[in-house]
Length: 485
Image (cartoon, rainbow, N blue to C red; front, top):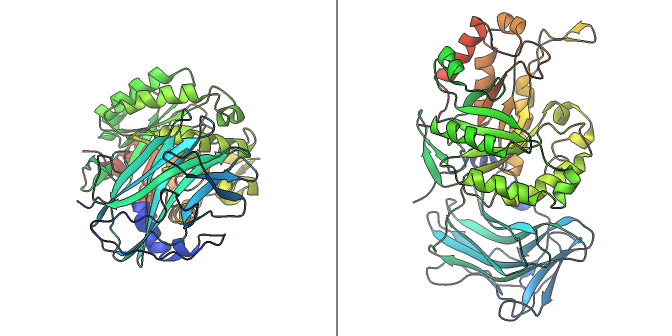
């Protein structure tokens, strides 16, 4: 069956038709390779066993290098490396591995990878580029040792007349080390592998549509809240007249078991748990692998739960340390999270810094890399009727932010949502439509979540919902919002 696409992919098709393929930067010259057409009984990859050196393959920049080595699985192999690091590197087919592929055809992609040093991560990827846009299918790997490891996945093409680009992507290679690659295959039909959890159906939504195994809804946006200090939200749900679609909670590094227990309860109550963790080590140490055992334990426990979980490490990093270290930390932890089949890897930024702040915090400079993040979240508040430097502030231009987030989402094939937001009591009284209008704007801009910051903790004004007016406003939005069935 043809599985539903995530909305970021449909948005990318709408906003970036034809540009994804054109925007890739390729360098290096190799002998001309004839591109095969799709057929029912062939293995399509040119020189996937690297018996002819690295002909038919290239990298994406001059800083990336591909070479032929003798110590493959059964002979030669390709070695990806970088001239200066840590940096990523891409093994890229010289010409599209397949062209003019009909919609509805199913394929299995396979590669064997070997780390020269433990801890390397990356993914196997197929880009299906059609006249109406592009889809990306991928499988992630995190190599804990230096043994050969098989990476494979099955996907169904949904783009009529698509061209397939086949890649193996390595993350954060250090200079002097490399990733070995061998036996790269793309074959018609299915193998005994699971599809990308971004595409697999996890269940159904109350308003129609489906959600993926990592909780991405096919339609609409979840609506929910932080409630107190990770307390039981049942009383609040009774006040607002319904179950939360999503719930934000926050934890320190020693609170893993507490977080897992609350996530389990949320899943049983049909809430999507969106959880944030502070880390046991500095960003730099986490990027170097010092916290891998902690992260692997957390992911294993969340992976055992029977439903989707959204996981964030150190939300709102702006001003907390060198932002490049935070980005490196996210790059390193992503493959660990993506070794699961039910956890979405989500970053959370303030939003204001990305749209109006310093260049170091721009959307591009805080981006770990395409394919590493499932959801990019933002904490954007309405500061109307709040006081700063003795002056009363006006309403925040929420949709101006959302427009930026929508464009970034489409460019990088990532979902987006609001992890925190709020309005104080005075502003809610003067603009009673704000909550509904903001939710509708998020949905219209392709966002998949809106979580209200309903707590007095770390609150600079009356964000918390304590009066009947905001309770009513919240309940009206919740009533018709997207929820897991």
